[in-house]
Image (cartoon, one colour):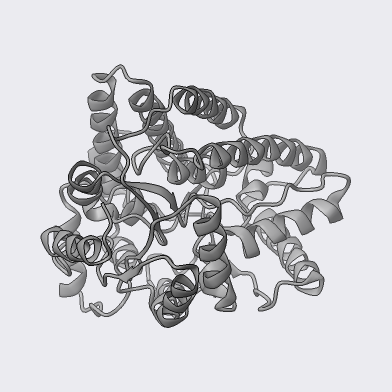
Amino acid sequence: MDKKEITQKGLGLERYYQEREWFNFLCQMLAQDPSETSQLSKEITEITVSRYDEIIRCAEEGKPFIMGYFCAAPEIYEALDLPWYMIMATPFLAASAPYLLEDIDAAERMGLGTDWCTACRLTLYYIESGLTPKPNALIALIHPCDAATMLHQAVYRNKRWRDVPIFAMDPPYFEDQRGIDYYAGELKRMVAFLEEHTGRKLDIDRLREICLESNKQYELWLEYAQLRRAVPCPHGWAVGGPQCFAITQVFQAGRPRGTAWMRKLVDHTEKMVKEKKGPVAKERIRYFWFDLLPFGWVFEFLPWLEEEWGAVMVMDMFGYTPYTLIDTRNEDTMLKGIAKRNLYESPMVRQARGIADYFASDITRVVKDYKIDCVIWPGHMGHKDGSASTGIMREVCRDLGVPYIHIGLDLFDKRYTTPEQCKDKISQFFTAMGLG
């Protein structure tokens, strides 16, 4: 089946072909740099391409695949041998692609409100425009924010997707054993839903294999996170936590290739620490970026922080690792372990879903463990849950004696607060606080 025929059949793969080509281009660029860090990034990019290949193949051949989330038990998808892609894949993965701003403008012309999280807005635009492959089933969220709930309500009403069955787990509020038990029950309901609509059956022994392999990945991630405490920090923004997150919770959950990549990362980092090397010649500022990275304009901003100020992102929200290994003794312990990991420990969902104490406790631990000089809360326009807690975060930083800044920006649309405006705000902040 050629691309023209696929377009005529309405498989929604046009943009997926573009994105795959974009990542192939990035692979070629990274291949020109023989450094170990670039080669680690190259392999991550190759893994990304392989995921696009997998979904495209399923769509072309009529094989079952689903749309889901990193925080909705990908371990179970893997155990079901069920290909899946993240509902917000394009806004996050292809945010550096040259057509991003055009897509944002097209979403606005469609009538989607500009006060709505850009990631959710773009996702709905891609679905409404037929630029996203229609899955056999959708695992939705009713947490951690209102924007996610609105997105799924809109998808439910899409004419082309009207026959796509949707399931959303009900998240308990408090983190206690009762909440874990309840959410494990929700996972059982999700398994029954997926079995019904995809024809796959969950094998508990296979789930155990996935969980054991996944545990190896998280152990390596924890080891890597400990190595980032070193002064100087061995890596900055370009390699680290976000890639570990992508491996463990999106592309390679419970897969041996992901484990092998994590081992390479740890081995390389140990060497960097032993040689006392970091991403800059002289590390002057160690900052905690407490949110997602600015995907739409990351290359225009974060390298500047390193080059201009010697400021190194020692830790970020998606690199923070308060994870618990899964007890694999039986089905009950595995489901409870998966429930705890995905509801209480997955980044962003952990902080935004529940009580404000998560913002305070995470800042406190990271500042103390990683010798942080300042905390940057970018204040993505869609993360209203976190921005509502900015006063709490500021007070926590004041008690810790660490400067705190709330910028106010859009992680995807650089026109909201331009990179130059962000640079000016940060420069004034560093100067006023006597940093650098």
